[in-house]
Image 1 (cartoon, rainbow, N blue to C red):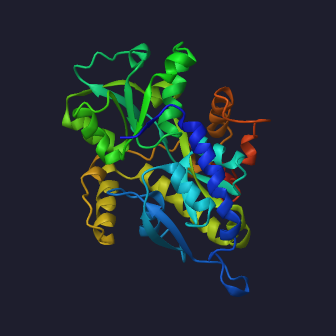
Image 2: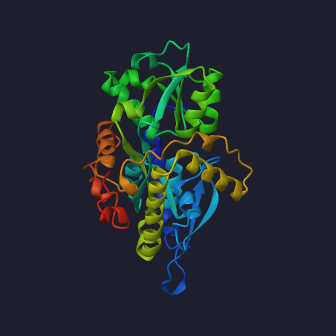
Image 3: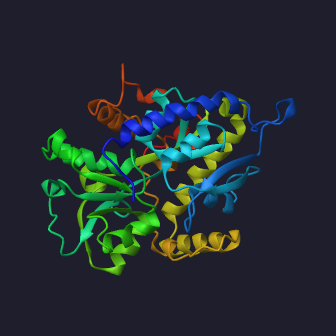
Amino acid sequence: MASSRHPLRRTLAAAVAVLALTAAAGCGTDAAAGGKQTTELRYQGSVGQVTLPELAADLGYLGDVKLNWIGNVTGGPADIQATATGQSDFGGAFNGAIVKLKVAHAPITAVVSYYGSDAQTFQGYYVLRDSPIRGPRDLIGRKVGMNTLGAHAEAVLKTWLVRSGLTPAEIATVQLVALPPVNTEQSLRAKQIDVAVLGGVIRDKAVANGGIRTVFTDYELLGAFSAGSYVFRDDFIKRNPDTVKAFVTGVGKAIEWARTQPRETVVTRLKSIIAKRGRNEDTTLVGYWKSTGVAERGGVITDREFATWIDWLADAGELKGAKPKPADLYTNKFNEFAAAGGGA
């Protein structure tokens, strides 16, 4: 298990490095000859889970736009880096990771929120029931396992530690360990890590298995908020505005469908999608689905969802020069819910 005490800086450096490939990937395959807009979107999925675009496609909300699955990804930063370099057409990540990639001059723009935290769906920081860890100071010198470094889980953890009065030196002793989400619970129970960051259906399954307890959650710390967005490359958006609009509108409709349907209806649909795609996956996880966690109606993005992490990154010394403005990082112009007054 790899660990790092400076993952934000390393993630940003990696982002700058991969952008060297962006110019070569710029034209890519995202528009047909003669200016015809593409109707196929390459993307990365998640094992045993259903993404909102996949749900939208199954519900018929994407119209003529088709999804082309090119593999799975475990972390948002890698997903949006693949989009920035033209390996995929869209990707999703924690908004703080989008900020970092954007300030590294990645030509990407966020277009719709796709996950977040609310009373039902959130990321929690869990320990074994008999663990001595109760508060922030108990994490000094401990190992915390999370799906990826330099993203949502790390940002929330360090925000909590800073607000709790820990010094930079004390925070630096907290060891961050990157683990695949499906292995994090097992690593906690095997005492390979002291704290496990668990979210969504993976969290619910772990809690149902018993023997663990919560130290704190991002919802308790920050309230309800949308935490991540889907992005497209700017050149893709310019050449394929109708395709992007169909995607954003479809994802927004899928969010509202999931918000208004009985939970059992949503779970049944998610299981059927996994079964139909034939990737030899277990449907156990989606049985614990509760909500998307998206705060705004139809995935409309607000300044707050980027401003929080811009300020945190600046305070952490990860942003050089002037802070970017939230409005420069995202657009709602493709989202029909924004035009209709999409605020929750």
